[in-house]
Amino acid sequence: MNNKGFTLIELVVVIVILGILAVTAAPKFINLKADAQTSTLHGVQAAMQGASALVYGKSIVKGNHKKPFGITNSVNIGDGGGFTDDGELLVVYGYPIGIYEQFQRLLELDTENDDSYYAYTKIGTNFTTFVVYLKANEKPTSINDDCIAYYISPTDVGLSPTIKVNECL
Image (cartoon, rainbow, N blue to C red; front, side, top):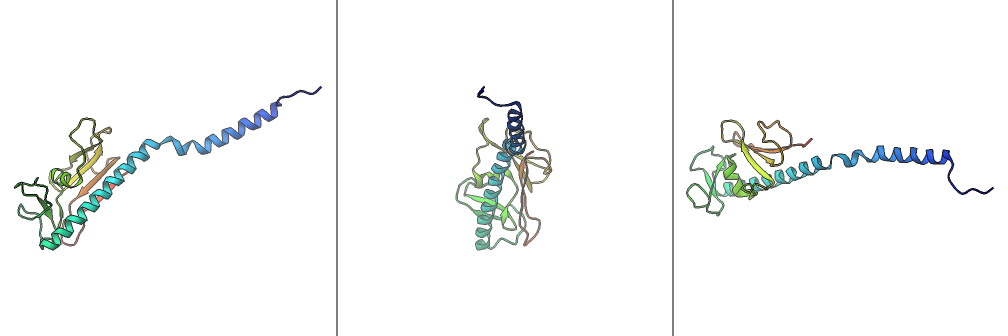
C-alpha cells in the first residue's frame, strides 16, 4: 500500500521546530511600543541638544555666555514671543533656561491639543528643570520616572545643560 501523508514523528518534529522559532523570534516583537516611544523621546532629546547649541552660539556672539540667569540675560531668536515680545529668549550661562514655556519656543512641539503627543511639566520648585513626556503616559513627578526626556539648566560657567532620556518600559 502506498499511503500519502505525514507520520506522527514528522508532525512532532515540525511542531518542535516551529516552537523553537517562535521562542527565539517572539521577544524581538513583543515590546515594540516601548521601543517606539523611547525612540521618539531620543528625537526630542536631539532637538533639545541642537536648539541649545544654537542658542549657545548666539550667546557667545552676544558675549553673555558666562553670565548666570537674570531677566536681562537673553538672546534674540526673532520669534516675538519673549517677555518683552521682541524675540528675546532667557539664557543661563549661554544656554536656554529650563522654563518649558521658553524652551517650547525653540522646539515647537504641539502641546496644546488634547490629542497631541507631547506635554511639558516642571519638576521641582525652581525653573531649571523640565520634562517632556508622552501624553499617553502618566505625568512624571521626578526625573527618575520612566519614559521621559528631561532638561536641566547648567549650574556654572563652562557647563552644558543635562539633556537625557529615561527609557520606556
